[in-house]
Image (cartoon, rainbow, N blue to C red):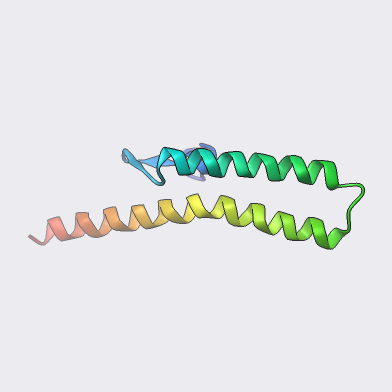
Length: 86
């Protein structure tokens, strides 16, 4: 979840800027859901190291959108600062 607006991590938008294209966002959301399903099914039968590795993949997927939003926010701040000094 976004700490600023409580939207799902992979569907973040701020200032009408889409962090990622809709196709990429949909694909990442689908992949995240499939990994969560796999983790649920694997929880009792697989080795902890396997589960840990899959959790790391899931975390990395979710951070992609978060990081892209941060970069978009930084770009907006830089653009805003440039306009102030023009």
